[in-house]
Image 1: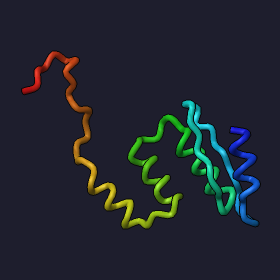
Image 2: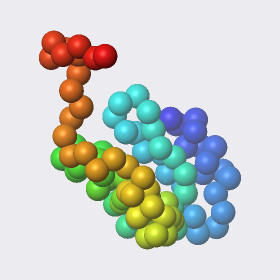
Image 3: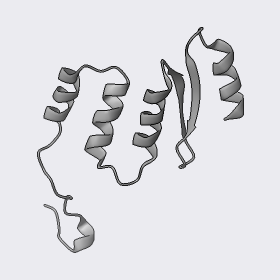
Image 4: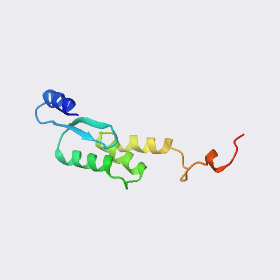
Length: 95
C-alpha cells in the first residue's frame, strides 16, 4: 500500500487529496478526493460493519458522483426480496 500511496501522491493534481484506504480484508480503495469530509464519509461507509449493504452502496454511489437518478435506477434493478434465499444446506432439494 505504501508503494501505491507514493505513486498516487506523485500523480496528484494541485488541490486533490490522494488516498489509500485499507479496507481491512486484504483489499484497499485508492484515488483522489476534492476535500477531507467526503474522504472521511467514504472511509466510514466502507469500513463500518453495522451499515446495511444497500445504504452503503447508496452512500458510495453518491460520493463517487453518481446522480440521484442513477442510484435510484440501480435500486430499481435490484430484487425486491428482503430475505435470505433458501439454500440446499436446509435440506431442500431443487428441481
